[in-house]
Image (cartoon, rainbow, N blue to C red; front, side, top):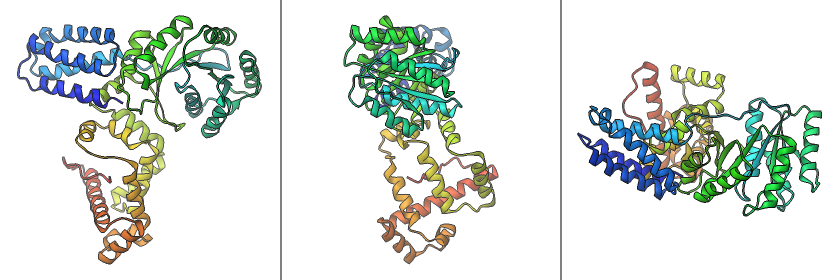
Length: 440
């Protein structure tokens, strides 16, 4: 989502870092380009103006102008101010009311409320809660069926009794939850194509009757300033506790993410990407700022890796590396672990510097991993365990069986040997400064 904004900011920062000395004049010129980049990304005009004013005030101070590395100081100021703009610190859900806790999702139709409700249910279940999804949208055709289907994927139960009275549905769901020891209700409320009085009245009644611990406004990240405007209207009429940005894997310019916190003064609590029930991330302002400024997000990448690989698997892999017994079968298992971490495009954005390589033409997608797995699957067990025996005739057979070319097989074997060499260097504490080729 932030590719264009990141590219524009990178160009500006490269110019500033390239100057041996910064003056008030060239700082002003650089920040003028930063403001243009923000506006092109559909950031709210007032938000962009205030952001630039704050950065400029700090950047023209003596600390920067007399710094040995003024360009790096500018980058730090931009990073710090972007973190502040996005909310400063991560804010988790506040579930301190009576059990069952109630989380109410609100927003316009098509913003992704139903999908988010299921994702949140899965997220809370992983944290040890026993959630219950509540089908409180009685207007949109098939809304209940969609929630039931998403609930099955998330392995979270759904309360959908077929009634048309929203308040009755929510109250019965709460009684059911108490009886069945379910400690969190997630209300999937109705949306409209636009905000109207009837919609707000119904939501206000649900809020008054169930006293939710959290009301979350679901904002479609693809709609830019429209999402910010809708959030402002919901805040005025209903109030809410936090924001969820959905569809953040799309090709929108990202202005909603940078504007909505500043306009509403409510924290962003989650980012939702894709249709998978596992594609929900708690929102960390510092991590998103790092992605936008091309610094990556290594912490999130490590967390994803920890979620997909248990400790015993990690120990087993480490032992194989130490004993130099890492095989193509182990290599294939590692590729499967990478798949489980999420779409490759999103993972690459978390690695510092990879955004620039993508813009230079580096292509990373699941089809390349499919090719690698097809080649390994075409090998015999002995060939996977002893790749050194794979010579001419064997390579031709493997290529035919996998629907690839001999050159593809050669490339995979070369990359595998490079990877083993790198692992041995890491094990000896002599990590090379050159990173061998990745398997895609």
